[in-house]
Image (cartoon, rainbow, N blue to C red):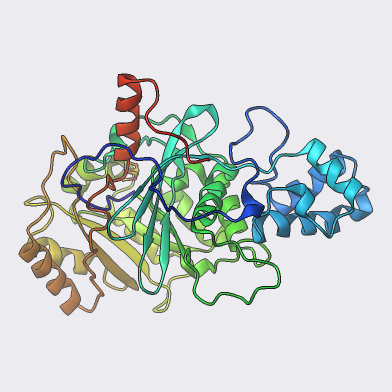
Length: 406
Ligand code: SF4
């Protein structure tokens, strides 16, 4: 949804660097999503898993218990090998192996920034590619995941907006992004080992490619799996869904997912927002803000985040800052100010640092937190959508771009 960094020079796609983190042995079974093969357990809800087990021959009275066991193996322990599921009888493991796959999308390339940011290009069924970015900080590790291949919304500052929508991701492909990065970080819990207090992958933001509220059911099911206490077990407070402003689905996100909400605002007048975020022509600023005021979970401890990309001479004046605080008055909120990541051919420039600071000061003095996002991964292609475009250009130029990691 939002750009993450400005590359100074566009690097060549890189395979995994030597000495990359080692994936635990338990997780080395298939990573490629099955193409029309056996049903994949990854992406199944508890109810779907139970029904699939019954269809595969599990007696109905045992199905709930078996689904719970399998659920924990797949989503909590990250196990891909049915033979490693030691609390299941051998013949039952064989039955499962004959009926199901446990498979993730495939990492095509991974770029490692000097600042620790990892950017992955991930291949999904049909050969399509999406981007996933892991951003480590001292007290957290945030994973930015994608919900669609391309996007319909054409936000004029966004590189992904230049790529047309190919399709929505499935639940398996969305939750699979989290699982494969846990693989890459070597972060699945080990049975019997002490619980880790601070996770490497502790937060998720749905700010990658696509508009998550245009793929509601798959995003919801994937996030419910991520939040499940017997699954990946991330708190709903550590998951943020970022929308460009799909007004009819915002209330539903609060009630059916219950995660934190971020809104790509980026402008303080409809005339400017109509250009930057064209969905504004359908649901304008006033309609959007009225809907957010009604977001059931909003309180001082659960604020909405407004994303605001700083574009030189477009939306960054003192008057914009003052108008912004008038517009959001009464909404528990923080405003993330994002220095624009220029990409080749971008029609905008990043606001100068002093302008961004002056804007932040006005918002802060009005009582709102206004952190300026530190650009990350400046030495890799971290603006959303860039890595995918570079991969497509490279593929057109030559048949193979880099050795797969898995
Ligand atoms: S909604 Fe689509 S075009 Fe707009 S910022 Fe998000 S990914 Fe880019």
